[in-house]
Length: 253
Image (tube, rainbow, N blue to C red; front, side):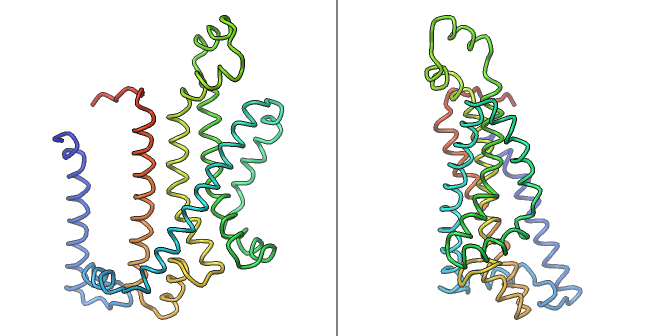
């Protein structure tokens, strides 16, 4: 408990100090609310947002979860296929890297033209954002299998399925979860980008409405919610990793 608190209190104190300085600056220099609202103004809008704001949050959460699950599964399947078929890996891996050089914000309008303004293009946007870190981390983890144990299992007659299930996959789990944690935070960003392009609800749509009305305080509320959702997604995956990867040795302090 004491070790946990020693890790938590420094960033908490830093954030509180930053908020106090922010509040004092907006009050002392009489900064207009539409330019830079104070933390108090943002908190007021958060608590008084009503059902409209939280309806948008719920829509984004649903979209994020759907896209994250699909993107993670796509990344895992791609990684397993490329790991099992080395020829495909040498042929397609450069294309995977190339796919990440296309900005999502530039690709999203094309997806809207091809697939309309329904759920499908939004899911595709989030999938494109999420699958790459999962695929790369999974392939990296599978590649770093202990060669001594691999040779031993081959010597005792283990087949490829047994080697994968009992050695390669367990050994790669920490790397896989590293990629999934990155994808979890990216999924929220992907959902908001998708909602910017075309939606009638969600945090991204809410931000577009508030931008048109110069409601900077509500824009900050939306940003804060996006950050909290990303942290929540990361934390849930970290808890799942802790539950599943129990054999992983604890790092020394």
